Length: 506
Image (tube, rainbow, N blue to C red):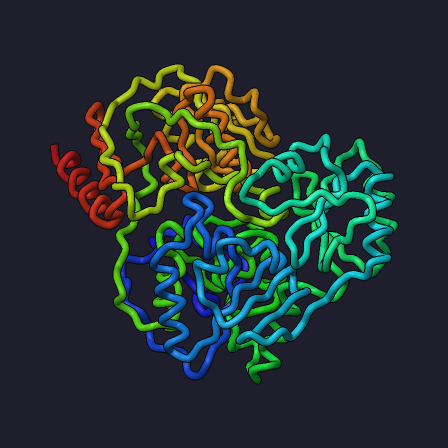
């Protein structure tokens, strides 16, 4: 299956094509419009807002406007509180805002829900957080309030030092303002179990990974917010469409049958996706809405990226930049799980302000060069195998993987260490392939490679690649690599097939 766009009528829930990288079909004509009014719910970071450019693409703004013109309802459904929306309020024009995991709901200027935690509850939580050595971040209408001026946690320090994010230190005796939810940073050196036990059943604790926890009043979620909107407008679940990319969108995906997954996404959502589109940067929102018939088709047709094939094309040199500092106006939850490019990096520029690179083909002798492949799924397996075929010493790191990877490990074609990626895996590497099912891990590998001047390929984001895998035609010692520089996937594949046919006749 050459497209990463599919729906539940074509595939059973929980099964995906081999490639789920967000590159859609070549036919960009939209289907017929669904009958009746629909309610569309969008996450922010990684869905509306690019985590690469920190901008909302013009195509997304256009798609939302077209949907509203068709009579559909458009809502932003986010874990951020209203006070943490930041610039997104000025970049999109929805019919309403569903904020703080359903604790604040506004539709067409009317506030339908505003759940505020009591002052006494906040006081007890703040006191217990300090006692248990966890970093508490209270979220509400006035932004984020931190309980201590400094913290030993790197995530907490990053939040406090981000000039674009409104963080206020809560001094003794000062009012917190209206608090709707809170987040906690806690590790094994803290007494986090005691702290979480003290919250009781009134607070739902959600583990977001990396020692970061989102805490929401029980009964409130992105799903409950959707139900409130559907009730107001007399719509059913079948009339709702949700758009998201990460695990904090899981309540929406579990709840609504029409679930659109962005091209770059967390694997946990795949079982619930009814349609997988392109990435934000590849105009995934507009593409999905055209294909699903939510807006008229033919607004434009974006070219596909080149094939994930076998040979390598290298850019002139690895980028040299530091991506450890957070940026933008994301909520504490979103900052904890992603570190977007800083301003000044070419990847932080709007997509239409930079040209796609023309890749210069170089053929490298890979014999006995160390290559790290992080991830042993379909993509990691193919890339590990072709690199090994060209003589590379391939180290694979992944707790689990494909049967083919296991076969190659048994025969000694690759070395497979069944564990997660570790930074020391990059020692002595000429090339690294970031192909895990965790976007944060892949992004971290890219950053480490850039710091150490190691060529790197990010399997899920071609904008972060120094090394590119185009089409390959090969016979004996003749090797031809074909690339369209990410502009026309279909053309690159067709040319590769024709070249292979010519070589086969020689």
